[in-house]
Structure formats: structure tokens, C-alpha cells
Length: 106
Image (cartoon, rainbow, N blue to C red; front, top):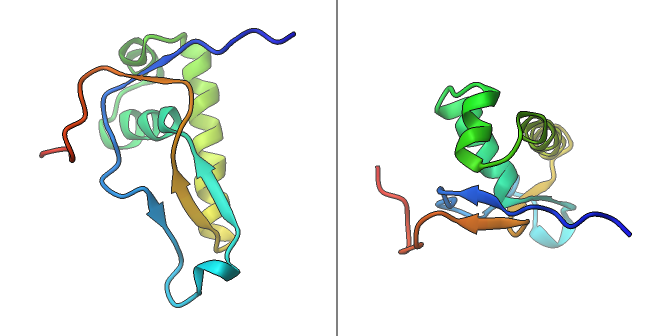
């Protein structure tokens, strides 16, 4: 039996949950599912400029786990972009660190 996944702290929700290539009907596309913890790791690393230690601390996980999540997110994002697949952001072992009220404000 595998060990249960520890919940990851997520403070950001995506403004849009679905992205697809232009001018291709959705019924013809394959999907790639990006989990919310992968979305959060990408945000911390690429947009906020946090290193793995800071990102891991913010998500309350180990640095190694953060690195694994980030690598998975980058693979999925590259697969969607390079191979023309739809990207769906949903689910995962997450715990919201603050209530969700419709959209993130800048």
C-alpha cells in the first residue's frame, strides 16, 4: 500500500482553468491535467522568482517534493504547448490557505 499524499498549501487559484490551441475544436484535442499544487509551484518559481527552498516553505512541503512537483508541472506545460494539447487545471492533494472568493486580485 502506498503512503497517502500530504496536503500542499495553495494560496493562488488560476483565473482561468482551461487553455486550448486556437482554431482547433475541443473534441479533437487531447488534454493534459495540471494539478493545483503544480500550478502553485510554477507560480512561485517562475513568476514570483522564489527558489526551491522558499517555495517549499510556502507550500509546507520538503524542498525535494517541491522540486518533483515543479518538474512534473514543467513537463506537462511543455507537452501541452509543444504537442498542441489542451491544458486543464484542476484537483490534486491541496489545502487552500485562504478562502476562495471568485478571483485573485492584483
